[in-house]
Image (cartoon, rainbow, N blue to C red; front, side, top):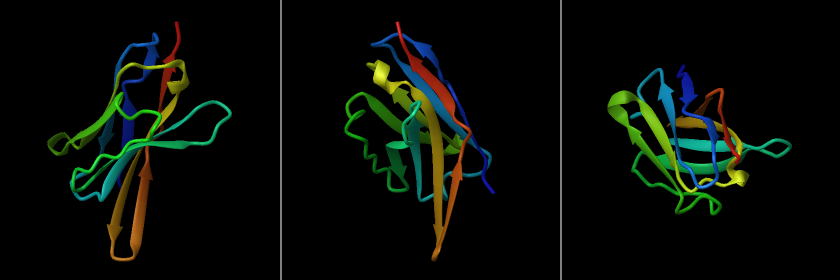
Length: 119
């Protein structure tokens, strides 16, 4: 079982930056992918970005060019650098880890961290 803990959220003005962290209780190097999702009030959870075991980093159109996902395997931590933040980025941000072992797929989620973009 892997536990994920997000941190780094907060209140930021439009145009500002935040860096979110997702610390795993176990090794992330064995994960097939790590991802960030977000859920705004009254909306469904949506995918934001992924980093695969091969270091591929696809992004949602809404954040491409402003957000960057990265990881530090030595620290078992994944990051989401968020720049040029907009009010529409306000949401609870969640970290997800996926491990595939044969036909078995295991998914792990964190509890989320609140990001509020407002003047």
